Image 1 (tube, rainbow, N blue to C red):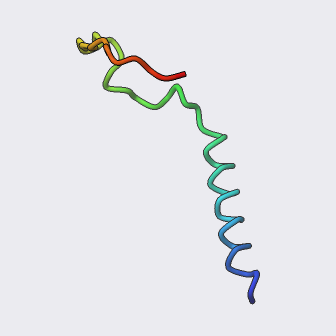
Image 2 (cartoon, rainbow, N blue to C red; image 1 turned 120 degrees about the vertical axis):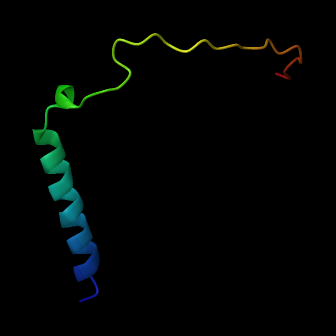
Image 3 (cartoon, one colour; image 1 turned 90 degrees about the horizontal axis):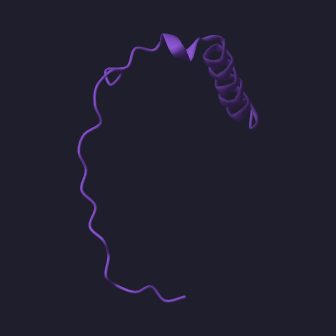
Length: 51
């Protein structure tokens, strides 16, 4: 009984992994396809890092 719960959790994870590997990732629709990337601003750090 002590090892039953971890074994069941492991088997459930293996089953989920197996089902996930059978799916085609290209079929997942993405709302970002065909849209421009948002503008971003990066500030340059003037602090010196110690080596």
